[in-house]
Length: 599
Image (tube, rainbow, N blue to C red; front, side, top):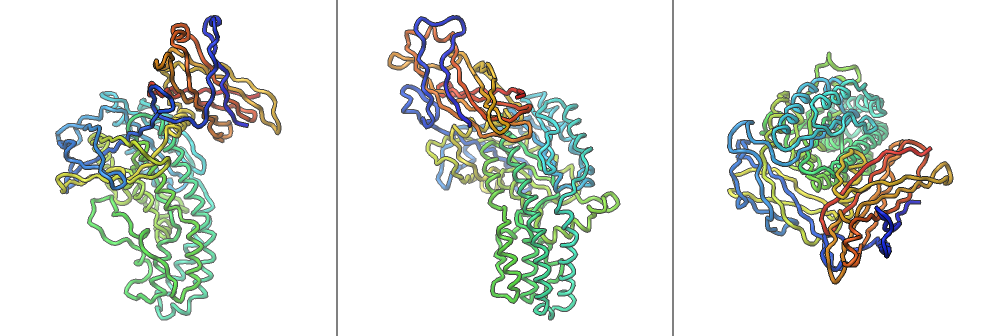
């Protein structure tokens, strides 16, 4: 059973002449910063929009003012309440670093990243990471972390400002062995079946109609592969979202470097388009050529957003009824909406994605299961780059998914991180968890802007829980209220679990208790989150505590403590707990973490 109850007010030194009444725990009280009557509390949300402005040649424009931007939230114009500019007016990379904290997460998607590709770019990643941390020593702090995902999320290096510690974390990534997933076992057979069928159709286009039997057999065989592709992509999405959520606790801007060879949101979307064209008798395009991206006028290393996700690939009405059935079954594996949601949530935390697909390695440098030919064949079946583009485009970052000039990508990322505009506006009313669209119009119009395109409107309750979970996972703590875990105790429960009680206290004098109608009043929110030894994150406990103390007793009460008790059902093991507190009058919070053993 998970619960939270208020124990009452405890004394630091002796008992008060008249005990202060224990405030009552409220679950559905209004949220936000309050002054005066707690029933009149109104919540507001400040929306930040970071903007990269360039001219038509891609050069940064650094002399703009607030008047150069018009902002629209869900199509409605909003007034810009905050405006700042980072970087100087000089050219090149010698610009002034930002004056606010920056955190960088390097996420190695080892499930979808070949060893050869990873090794080929690690030295450049190390150089880039070191330069960012060194820049942070001169101005606002820059932290960086290293995470690897191989079916499980592995923290290779916590957030640090130490270049040596970060380099050691990247070295641990380099030492990681290749991951053999079920998808890789199924890949070769599915690719060969498909390519054999396409070769048959290409050899004699007139046999298309007579190849329906072979088509049906091939597509049926590939459904198992599509299911595993979907499961792999879904697990990767979960891992990306976990890191994004953990970054919520960290102040300032966040850059999420997603290093991956790519993975599909819609398995076999390119195959369906290809089969549609072949069965429909389009003879001007054949074979693999049907699956090549159209030529685009973009800088080296950047692909234009792929239009496959917006094309209608419904082939009902053609002779390939088997393909229609295959397409319908594939629709259950579509993760496109999931990545839209991840991007919107990342935008709420000022997280921008820099999606990076390393250049293809030489055949001699790759293992047998990672041959370039196999990687290319797989790309013919599914769009592996669409998710990388989508996350970058929707969060105002960059996607580098082709080309070999890797240094150019890191140079441009450096410009982004050191030269940008930050706008802010107040959102007075919103529906909790609703997705808002952002549009920024520049003046003059010839400017090109990159910025986050959406965000999730989050309540104060959600934000406190997210920051507490960030402290739980990343250890990013702050404690202006002198919050303290007094005791952790447990009794034998049932089924191998123990009823564990956490007692948390803080001095009343650390709260912004405001005087109103003869009383000192405030309202605090307290959140508890637990991570078990086996990596399971238990549901958060959340309570709201209105506090009222007679003004005449305040001089004595401010030197005293009040305590809160949380109860969880937890198995044996070495676990971790994080506690978050939000002072609504003060408009600030404390977040602490502690490890403990249940034996």
